[in-house]
Length: 417
Image 1: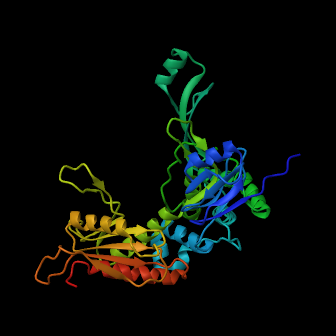
Image 2: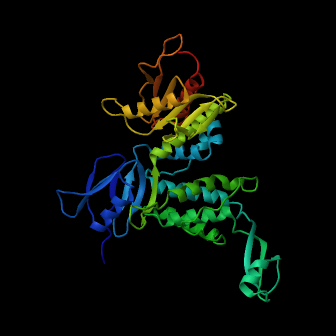
Image 3: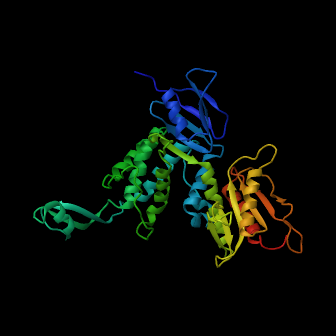
């Protein structure tokens, strides 16, 4: 019996690691795009140099080892960012509401599996949520309404059987189907600890009456209501699991490559957290934040730009501030020219006197660059490009305080310096 291949451990944005890897598995990883880079090691035959980027979690390719990507940010903080983004209104009122129970696990996949199982268990504590679902089938007796078009197409109008449709009161609701799909997905992931796997299997049995989802299809839609209130936290987390699981990638001229695992994109998570948190703070001031607000750089409308967050007056008409979130460590020389050029373009198009960049870059003080040749008005002040930083290692209440401070700067963005 062949011994299992040892796990490969990489670190988010860490140095490349040389690992023994078959050519097929190496090519699959390289084509998938889930790593920063994957190239044959020129110094060692049968080895590949693997370097992780912004995605953290675990993945496995057919015939290859499990690759675990460890985050720089503490796992419990990652899940705070996730919980906040999933339910910002509750989390903004009280940062404890954004907490996701990750147990004692300090790795992404075990912590995720534990969190989902705990939330599913809480959702099902009072039994399965049931509801009406339309059923379409062939039957020997008439029930509900006859599907006349299908009756004619399939049976030329003869009866029986009869093509019917009716509403069934069942546990096969969209909510239960999403929970079941997430539980089953986690049971297939590498790196889920045995105690958590056992509890997930128990939840799968409880959800057995819910129809399984077809992989690759869109998730069924559900609407928040009083009836599914106890499900809502679990549903949001399970949907995040299903969106982040087993990404399929289509390299040019090739078939889709299935990479089995779960990955958080820290770039996207940080952007979501910053823009959602700032939006909640700005709403308290009567302003209208717009996420991913589309504009064009040129008068011909050929060059499209989409700032992460545009802050508008309460009526939504006039922009007063623009924000772009950047999850990356500042370069040693501090020159983030491309980011500054991008911020200047946003300010120019929107007619603003300042633009704001928010980095996950530690405890650096807020600073700004005043752009030469852009001075307008009596004060002679040019366009200012502000750089803020948010330290993700801090406690949730400190994170929230830092974002409130940035929001306060945005509120007064239109006033003279």
